[in-house]
Length: 196
Image (cartoon, rainbow, N blue to C red; front, side):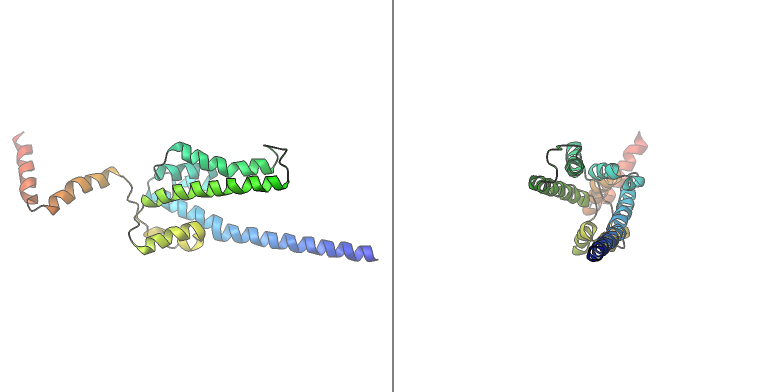
């Protein structure tokens, strides 16, 4: 009689743990994973990169690195630091590590290295978009830590990048309009074109 009550108590504890785990996973998918994909989808589209890359796990990090203009080895370093703990955890690499205390000490530096490289890439990624005031800086913090709120601001973020059109406007138009002889220069350039 007593063993049945202990077994039912254990099964109730297991059921509660499973329900709480399911709720936490659902919460993280709804409030973090899906909004992060939506943010990347919109930001990749603004950068004129393939927006569907936001849906594919390793490709989205590669596109993030391309937009941030970082060398490819840094992107692969982040991917390696992110995947390595999973390979070790499932025994595909270093099976001697198992679930010993040394395993957890080995995982913690890999996690922080991965997070640090991601922050480094993300800072360069954010520099490719207009970040002039405090609202834009708050957006990038929300993008990292609370993407469900950042979804509502993503359409207001402007991609400035190093586009050829941006360089032409910056080099030619602003110089002409900042000088007093802008009309004279433009008239002289039209005369040269008509003479040829």
